[in-house]
Length: 564
Image 1 (spheres, one colour):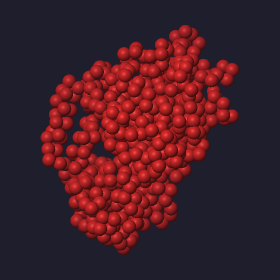
Image 2 (image 1 turned 120 degrees about the horizontal axis):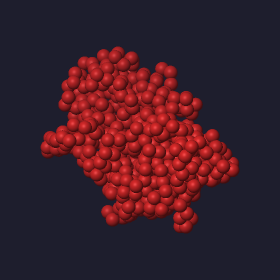
Image 3 (image 1 turned 180 degrees about the horizontal axis):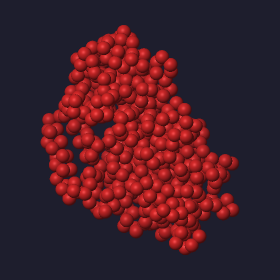
């Protein structure tokens, strides 16, 4: 192979999400020659489409807010939720290094985080906290990216207004609950977007970066400051080994196959396999359809397959970051349902017209139950969200936007939204027994008026109330479904990514099938089996470990002496 088809670096990083970008920044600061490759024509991966949150126990930001936490509490909490095959030392490594990673981000990049009173998903367990472990990024000015703004992956449709305008949590709250002054906030958002005339002439992308785009945008600026190259449209073909050590990779770049030799090693940070139909059929038999993933379309497990081809072991491949999702015809990705299920005046029923879960539980819990409960005669995939005219006026339901008439909703939404004058007539439209659905709604209405869900304790746990409407008493997640017309939307058991993957140790080294490290090969993010096992302890437990173990991998590869 001629020299034009060959390149040599210290470290090759596969994937341009938050884990890969932070690994590159860390390695560059330790004087390594780094190259980042990205399969698609946009950088940022699933990180850019996400909320950008990171779950960091015992952080300096939480301490500055006067919140008490400890490594012991964090370990007890994760250990109780995670699977037995996740080693203690991996969990302890995360708890140790996550706070330091966050300090590094604040010290060495323009990304800024806030520690928020956002409760752990299972705060009632020992070691659980009612807030301040979840951290969200501060908005970032996309103009600092220059031309790289054009290739930043956009936020998901579920994390932006009209699928175009980036918003932060305060703006989301204002538009969701419409308190006094909400129209002024909405007007400012619209003006901010449409008066950016130079950008509007070039692109629909919003240069006010929030959530995941703020995180990725800030990391890309830091990467550019270090002059680390990022190759787009450059998929990994295979890993190269010599005497059992990974020494580089074959990459397709500019329509040529290029051998990239990595003197120190390769870090895999390219996401899971949720968009790979064959792998889903093999491992995720209860949810085999890739269209039911809210993840971006490029996560097909290429790097996981490349690693197993050189002897890497995998673990928990049957597991996902489960979630209820709305699948809108014409949209490439499903939309995660986070908030709507906890709002008062809606329920989820199976195809037999019966409730079967606490709708306000975390999306991971709800998604897993939806998949597990699917059975003939009482199917749950899809299930149906039932709500009335009051809910329709007050709140969004997935892609259905309040205050906008039904006929002005998008064609895809109109094709799935069912509407009827009575609950019995609505049951006919969704194929459920009218008597059963009527009985279900009547029982729920009685509980809603009393404020106690006698079937599933909705609104009991602290997390349930996080997204409730505090103006509704005595239970902010409960209100009767009584005002016609009545509505139904299909909702599916899906995911926002897989969380099983390559087996790694506390240094993020990939292990082989005998449990030994494969020299020169590291993995983080959804390339690696999560330390959370099959659980979802809190908002940010995907990106937090991705960035932490990307940081750990880069330090270990560059010879850090304080890793033990």
